[in-house]
Length: 484
Image 1 (cartoon, rainbow, N blue to C red):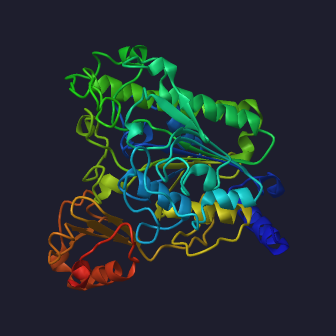
Image 2: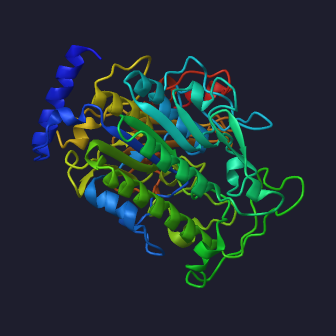
Image 3: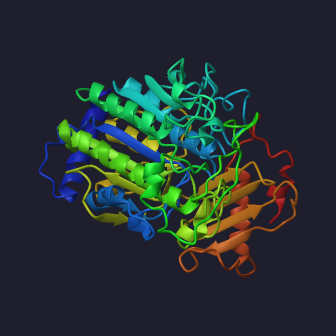
């Protein structure tokens, strides 16, 4: 690390502490531990601090009370793989290599290229021990996108998103070793993957408590299949009526190969699953406290996209997307506007809230700023470290950009309070964009494009210029970009 970077970082930290009224020694936080908790398909309204009333999330709410809540934070995409790609590369979906959920059979997704410079590689260069626990989805086993080839010292969990639909899988991966789960043979349900993954993550903290570490905790909860140990479900059974039932795939050649299993108590199971996630968050915090490293650890909690409607899930019953329109796979707010908390005792002001507009691709430059590392390559993100420290010199995005390569092709732009959305860009290239003013209409209920033709022209210009074509994820008929 260059001397000038150390000096600059020290000055930034000192200024941040002054803003936060902290008397801590700044040099203690040059290499903080970093824990990034990524829930899977957890909606903006699925947590207590954002209004969830059907069940409680006390540990996540405590993170919010002890840290900073971002009310205007966005996921990298509206589905799993590209959202994770944006997170780890610092690039939005107009530039990052993985822009969709393209699969490679028999197991895994299209890989991040070897040339990709990831956040984990950056942290390894800074001397961090790095681990990812949960769902990967950025390269099939042994490919150039394998987590061990993208900057992670340790990986435990699902490599493949399709197989991660199942909470009682036949196997998980520990680095390059395929771990057969004997308790799940046939139709047996004894080895609950979310608990196995959590145990490995806790062990990673224990093993690396004396070193600077980065733990990417990519929880599979509460994605898709609604299954977990019955004793967890029983705590909510009969309390979330009228109950919903789902008939899925419980036998045959496709069993545990993608299609979701059946569930007769969908509401109770969903509440129990998020409750388990909340308990696991609490256990992570308790472990840090037990080892005396909580004050030198920043925890970020968020979700990879909005709530889904698959496998018996019922986001409307739980008001999972709060006031927002849309769900997973939408580029309306409900598909990409996600909960986000940052906690760092003594550094981030407890109980603080920010309306700073940010997205997944900002995390990598924020961490680089935090530890004094120089970024490589083209980055779309902007560090929100000044916001974390309550400083006034926070830079802002000119715009945020998303593209989605399913459902006929979708694009969205947020610029200040303006939100432009364009659907079916491949099937209806002549279709006009929708325009919303989020300051007065966060639910995107009134398309006001006809009232602001100059904003529409500007948004179409951004859509033309914000992206580069990808060989793998193509918008093959770019004529839609020329429509004003």
